[in-house]
Length: 296
Ligand SMILES: NC(=O)c1ccc[n+]([C@@H]2O[C@H](COP(=O)([O-])OP(=O)(O)OC[C@H]3O[C@@H](n4cnc5c(N)ncnc54)[C@H](OP(=O)(O)O)[C@@H]3O)[C@@H](O)[C@H]2O)c1
View (tube, rainbow, N blue to C red):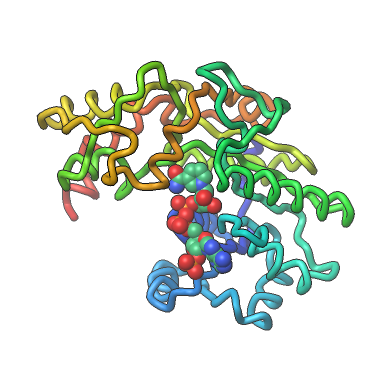
């Protein structure tokens, strides 16, 4: 890793959970951050954290932000028409694209591997509609970037978790359920580790690269849930079937595929290491009060 971390002027298309965390990291490094949201409430929350917020429908503001950016991060999920960020930014950019573009994708592009290991160069066999849209959005970005000589990187993420969004929260509010699917295994990643991977790539750009940013410990969901419940001194949550209406569509998609996603390429090329190599460290940190948290 270089001694001086990047302090980018970051434009985030999609200032949601991950986008906001990335914007905060740009500020922490002494850079600047702008993020989009269609929701005025969310824009106010971003502004309160020092992130300049704009409505992505405001083409003038988006163009100005793009011209000022040294890095663009796309977190908005694709829809039936493709990637909304590509649709919004493409016509505005001209030759104003920055030196680094990060496209946040998902490990759903790989589909089911019956518990086998998956690497970036493997075939893309998405099993869900959302996964298929991802494959298309990745291809659209790659084709566009190649055609214009842009430095685009793709980051394939498994389910990510962090403060306010994890089994810890579901156990606390009583909504946690154990979905049994024998033999099924998948990765997770702490949001801080996603962000550190993105910034490691800004220091070592490689046009057209795809990286899996995943933890080191693929595991069955019930094992993780039972571990967290025991650590919190709570009873084991109720068990339900995968087709139970209490299982959200997003959650059900996680159970479609069984695979172990390798993070070896990101480690080797980006010098990246997850601060939370497994869910034990990641969830454990959320259960151990820090001085700031306990004072809050
Ligand atoms: N959460 C996971 O475990 C997980 C796992 C793998 C991959 N991913 C992917 O990672 C990305 C970030 O996830 P997240 O949890 O941070 O999502 P999030 O909190 O829902 O944030 C997504 C952001 O994208 C914006 N967006 C979505 N559709 C848009 C559209 N049509 N036009 C303009 N903006 C749009 C949203 O903007 P508004 O504020 O305007 O609504 C929001 O700011 C997503 O693409 C997600 O699918 C997530």
